[in-house]
Image (cartoon, rainbow, N blue to C red; front, top):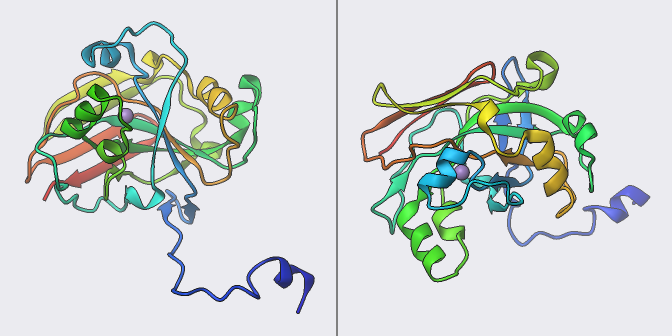
Length: 238
Ligand code: MN
């Protein structure tokens, strides 16, 4: 028995097969193994206003989805249970390649491996009920298949987008359309802030918030999102 095995898995007798690692396919080949999924709330002023909040620069706040809430390869999204108000939130997703705590804003982009287009699907009725009662958002946000995501584009190829169209069409009609430059907290600012709360690790994803005009979708709707220079995400609600 090697020292390495002693430290790791040699002696572990799993009582059932450990789950497979969720990974996002990389444009051009390979796969980005996902560790955790962080999401930024209210990161575009116009969306903060439509949700009834003051869009002034309060500190960013975060919630999470489990990694296995990711919906990959443009798969269909089953309409979730316990909700009659499934909302779309079109977002830029940043993927962390190098972890760290208390990452300086000036150094933050060197921790990003790549970017993807994603959807933070939300059971708005459950989220609103939780908000009203001061309860956690988890069941409004972190449910099965709640995070459709497209291919990951390496930052080494596309750079670090700071502006560009972020748009969602539903059944071919534009529903959300904005620009990445309208984020309240930039990606480096977000990483700096989040890494002061938790130690970031390779594989962490950060959904960076949605612009205005979130709205409900129904079974049969086809959602097609694009983040200019990054990629696309597509799903059909079934
Ligand atoms: Mn969101």
